Every structure is written in structure tokens, then in C-alpha cells.
Image (tube, rainbow, N blue to C red; front, side, top):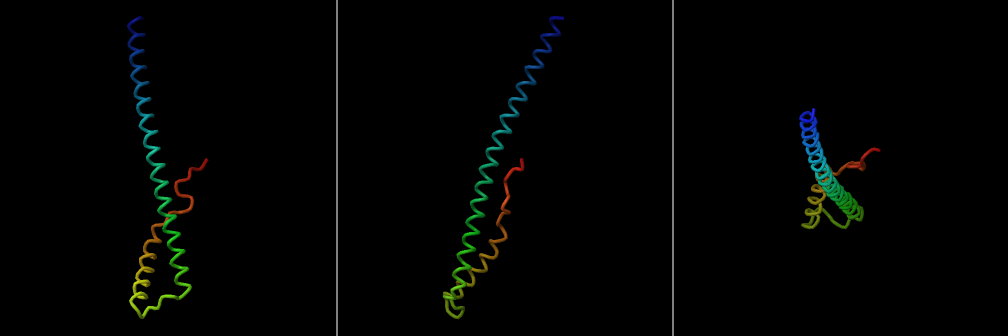
Length: 97
């Protein structure tokens, strides 16, 4: 009977260590994911702000397309349109509770 208790104790201790170790790894991965989501949301915010700024500049009509600055501005608008595709949805990374 004593040998059985000893074997079960070793098994329980081993399984306890496995669960503890796996939980520690999951918590670490969750922290990494949270920091990456925060980074991606910041990048998405910057994309949104640059879109607004380019649209404001375009509304003023200060840049004509027949000079070098106007050509560059039109190229910048095209780049902004491409970048806009990488914006994240507003609820990206938020957990539903």
C-alpha cells in the first residue's frame, strides 16, 4: 500500500509540474500577443491619421498635378491608398467578455 501511495505521489507531482510549466508558458505568450496587438493598433492609428492629413491637404487643392510637387503629391496619395488596406478593424485585439 505504501509503494502505491509513493508512486501516485510521484505521478501527481510530475503532472503538477507539467501543468505549472505549461501555464507559465501560456501566460508569457499572452503577454507577447498583447504587446503585438498594441503595436498593430498604434500602426493602424498612424495610418488613419495620415489618411486624414492627406485628405485635408487634397481638399485645399494646394498641389497642382502639372508641377513636380503635384506629381509627388499624387504619388503620395496612391501610396496612402495602398497603406489604407492595412488598417485594422476598430475591435481588433479586444476580447469579448
